[in-house]
Image (cartoon, rainbow, N blue to C red; front, top):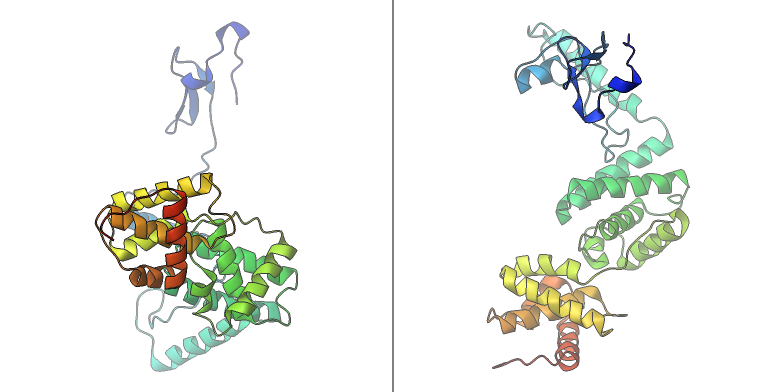
Length: 305
């Protein structure tokens, strides 16, 4: 129910406040009730602690893309107590176990469900081994689901497509992980993962930005225990290299490794080319060649090599 306002006495939008106890919108300037008897859209119960709120809430958790059914289904718990808290007798406990077994079987019925269940487990495993954040795993799960919907998984290894989806997700979220790093945690070889990655880009129109060498600097520097000043200097070196066109067509991990090596030398935090190459996932030859190119083209002087 609304009260009519005259055009001369309209309340500014930023002065309108809501009184939850009365269910009214009120103008804070003149106290006029603009709207009353507002229906409360919140729960009919009250909670004063997070524990009470969680206990009384009747909704489930948020959607989880890394579960094959997005976490929408209900699971029968392993607890051997009834709703009141009394212990179940052995016969009743066995009956509940049978319910749980058939409920789990009923969750996965179609071939797509079985495929997604296996793929999401694989995605979770690879993501945990790589230390990827949840946002990256969720993005990879979405890409894989799109591939399943378009029938791209048929006839291909689930592991290969999952690894390709994770790599595409890392590229989209600017997380520095190379194809070799991801492929080493799967039974599929790098060539097969790369083929599936190109297929996803072509068929799903996944927008992937060009890999930036600076994305690798923080990760490589952290693993080597370098200071923030050295990592900042390495990023500045890569910016200069990009401005003169040195980064075009070069492996970003190799460029980042060479810039880290130069920055460590300049800041007297010496690390060997072998150490840096192992952390960056490239060869010593690559680090050495990129290092020579950078110091020659950018006129960087290294003292006491």
